[in-house]
Image 1: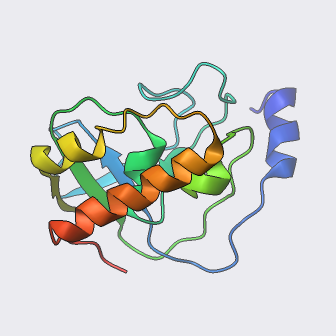
Image 2: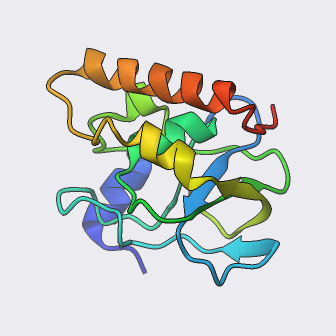
Length: 157
């Protein structure tokens, strides 16, 4: 049963126009090759001010995912949706138009792609996730893309 706040938020959700693959990152090493994720209202990487709406946060590229979260510099696993899917545009997430974050609002199957090597994480997170204005976030995404390209990091279209 939805709360009245959730009902109002759901009316604001807009779906993407075309299905595509999306990426999701995790530092949970217990995940297997294929995982089915369910939308969650809360998560360890969520800001306190984010809306209480069940979702799976995804990005169009690994670089966008890395830029949109501050992760512990350990080991990160990359997953991609098994099939091309429609997503919803986030509501109440200030930086989503730069990070291109989307939400999946139903149970979705993901396949394991690879780990992000610690060396890449160290370089990517030299930019510590804090920024003064939105242009710095855009620069951060471009720098992370450059680092991934330099290391020939696999990323499926």
